[in-house]
Length: 170
Image 1 (cartoon, rainbow, N blue to C red):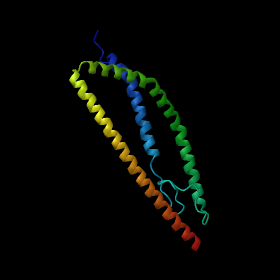
Image 2 (tube, rainbow, N blue to C red):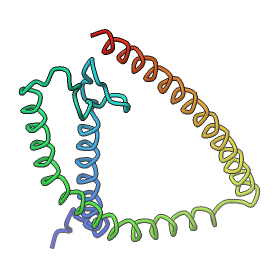
Image 3 (cartoon, rainbow, N blue to C red):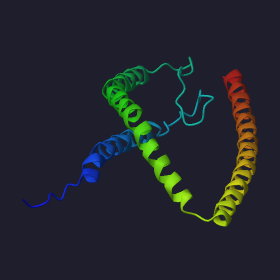
Image 4 (cartoon, rainbow, N blue to C red):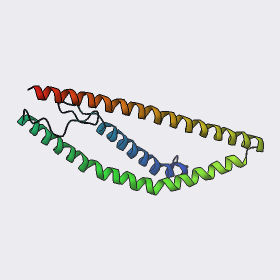
């Protein structure tokens, strides 16, 4: 009897590949969901890239209300289809991640046991140095985020003040 090309290892990999494919779909949908909205020129929201929830009271436009309803309806439909898929992905992760991690840990242990003590020490030192570098990187990135957050708030306040000035003149 000819030997099957689907070995037990390949057969075991199919659920992992399926979980990976579903994860890619979820990641792509999250990226599509994160596409920023076009902010309106007046009454812009405090959060960058988001449309103001309530347009200015000066000029109500029925088309805006209609578009708001269409957007809400479309987002509700989108999430009614996406949420079950995300639940499936979560269930697959909860099922396979611990099993995969156990195999990865077992493999790592075997690889480490085959290394000389000098090489193990060198690897440990590299790991320590990389962790210290990652900590410094995170600290610097947090500082940059804070700086831009403050600048963003200042700009938003500047334009909010200008909008108030314009609306008091009219």
